[in-house]
Image (tube, rainbow, N blue to C red; front, side):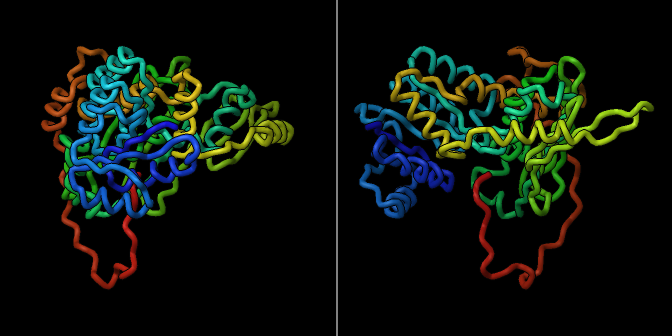
Length: 389
């Protein structure tokens, strides 16, 4: 029986607890750690847990009672908590983003290597059927070489979203929609296409005067071989319609799922290619359905790696670092106004948290026009607040 502790008892901790509850025969949550004990107690009671409550997670590391922790604390605390847990011999599953800087990621990776414990970074979208199917089709070669990707990470968050004490701050949240919402699609993009050669980007804060951070960014990635990808990260898009579209030499595929294949006429103009579309559809239809999805799928992956002793997971610390490196490059490109080459060097001022904060503090996001508050009557009395991205 794997003994689990949850560090941080905010909204995302509920998602982790629901996932662990699916595997009650394999693991047991034995502790919740949070500075606010009332919040931890409320979560314990809601899930009917028989577990220990502590204000300081380090109490749990001294007596060796944990095998695995889920780190659900605010991003600026991720690196310190992860390093301390790994050095204490505890496996770590950590929420996105992995850390606040590449330097912190490297500290975490060093602690993981020296401890011989598992470090997995949450990327629940890799455990969703439509995304697994899409990746399999891309790797099959049926659509040909990818020449263009269009990624739309569209979310919407109101101003009060940034009234939470750690949000809206470069120092505590680490970044805006590019980091904390776009991270899901950024992870999928690098999982499906690999790391690009260079990045160019722009960003702005259009609608959230109580936040220091961007609420809209647009990035262009250039890959070896000439392929391009463009990605929009946003918390200002009504409807939150998200998609990933991959254009290959022979056909396009996307999530939400859609296939369209073309072949050329003698004059070079297109005509639809139904036979290839049928072949792609058949291949995609044969993809095995995942037994567990999203966070539950990733928790199963982590538990399995611990149980079989391999400690091999789909998203380890190196994969988590790649995603943060891509996001850091977007920020560097937007702030400097230039093309950023990858991989990023430790000599980059954006490599450390201190250097990153110094750079973004000097970057003036465009001044926002004054926006009138919505009339009270326009807000339904039973409106529900949004969850974590």
